[in-house]
Image (cartoon, rainbow, N blue to C red; front, side, top):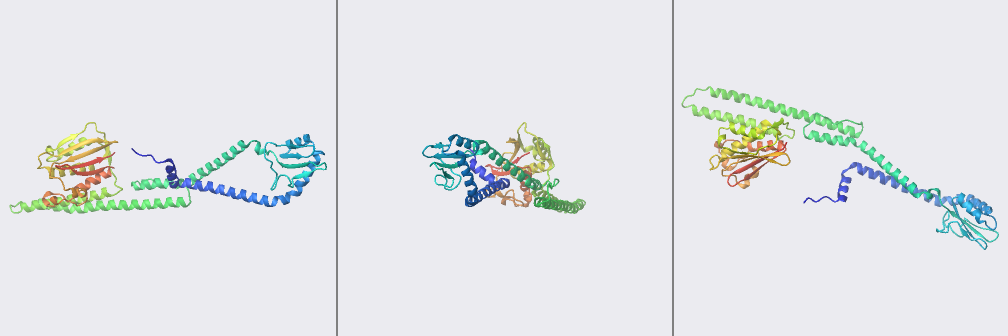
Length: 432
């Protein structure tokens, strides 16, 4: 059973991987830090300096308010002042004891607020009038102001995220372009959206991709030229060997010469094909292929194909494959099975079956002596032949299984080799 990752670890991994989220986090933390520093500095400045500057003005205003309350203080006038101004009033004395906000703790305007503070006035009849903060306008609807502040903060974060996302959009284009270039698709360059550092990076990657494409084209041209230049003299040598007089003493020599020339021709073809397939930018000529029909065709073309037992499942889907290279795969596996299992009690078998999600598995088995377990992993290496196959009479130069593995991998599949006791089983999995 697959264990799902913890949500906290998932988001932590996503935050570490995403440059956008980290930039947004830095932006939010920087904004909060700047706000905290600003508010702290302003509070410190006001707490240290506002009292000395405002005390004379506020003191004179308090004297006027006390005079407006009268002697003794009139409660009705005090209530009118509390309604008109955002202040609180407490009256203590022999005749009047009244508090505008008895339900909450007394708060003054500044440090040391309360009784005995400079915001307290005494009347001639012995009453003490203290002033403090009342209900401020933003305290009447605290939830509305708090929600508005939160909404503005979220709006700033969204705006910052959209801006950062637009700022880093070229990174998505560069990533997609790098994936295309890695697959060998150089026809679509990375779009240049801006003329900044990321735009310069995209331009440099496009230039690099263009240079790589040029080198690959030159390599392909060299392979084609090499193939032509090597095959032409081999063809002429083969024709000249065919034209030699068939004297009794020269028949064996001519047959040996023709055999060596044919082996050189096959070796050159296999080397060129292995070089093409080994490249990560191999271009496959894909087309819908009926794999069972192709297997029957290859078996029918082989001189010893009549001895092969076919087990081909019905209703297999058509796969988009490179027909010529799949023929090479089937032919090489068939020749190996007939070469090393032709003398066995049972004939070689070829099976086809569907595999999830939409692939096909090709299995070729012979009933020969098999291969030593220590050599199984090296069978698909280039130019590797087992000890029992090192004689020239067995044919081959050790490229057949290597080419089969390259063909399977070029089609997104795998090639596996195992001993079946008796015999050897080679399984090629092909994906669309």
